[in-house]
Length: 344
Image 1 (spheres, one colour):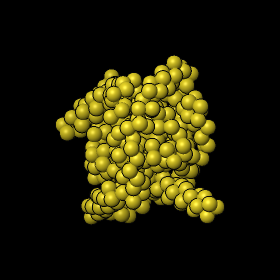
Image 2 (cartoon, one colour):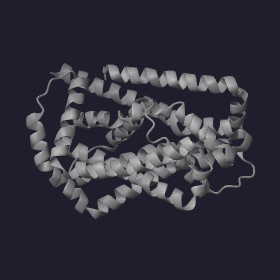
Image 3 (cartoon, helix red, strand yellow):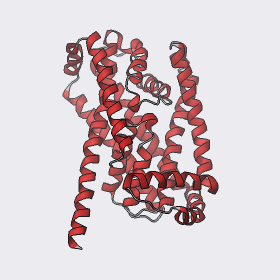
Image 4 (tube, one colour):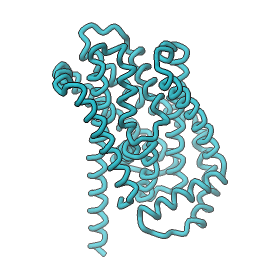
């Protein structure tokens, strides 16, 4: 984990976070935010906490099921670690690009064959993007007013994000069943692995062995309909739960809520879809700006506070939880390596 790029990404993220909230707190009173926090009853805090835990747990269950179907017996604790790793490193790297390479690194440490790790991660990406494509189409059909009432920049970002997700699904499907393409991707990942571990592994032979049996494993997943259906349900449920947090915030600070659950969740998905192609780490700054714009209609004079609470509970708090879990996981791995070296 000594990669200089990780340190640079972390510094950029912290700087963007500080500038964003510095500007907000110069314009709006901190007391207003604290007032909103006081308005939220302890019951709602508990529900939000449970939702965050379930979010990470569902992804861990997904990995457990996929690896079991591929004859890899991975403990649930390690699957939870993969979930925390993905959220944390995606959150602090530009375009959320850091999560899966680091997941791949830890899966390799756990002796999971590269071909199986790649299938699990690619399928997860396909299902994640599919969720946004399906919900994006629902927004166009049933909640087009969200698009029409938005500024031009948000409209453009939404449709670019939707197009990007469709292209990403097509690319990932090709990636699962095109040996030449997977060979190039594996070469890229091995270069990252060599950089992280300061090793110089000759990956040509390994990649050849992987690609020869990779498509066979991918076909097994495709033909295992039960596993595919369950995985899809888990990923869709995971994302729905995270986007439901804003509804909990909404009903907790509005004494007379006028919008229903579907309205609020679709609005939050619309926000996230508009941020899909934002390359800044954690969408810091842009996320707050677009969220604030779209929250005018539902939070009234609590617009900025609603935006802050949204980002706090849907991004910064899970990021803090995942950071703590990743650090514990790294420390545990470090201690195990020290014990093995001592025993030798």
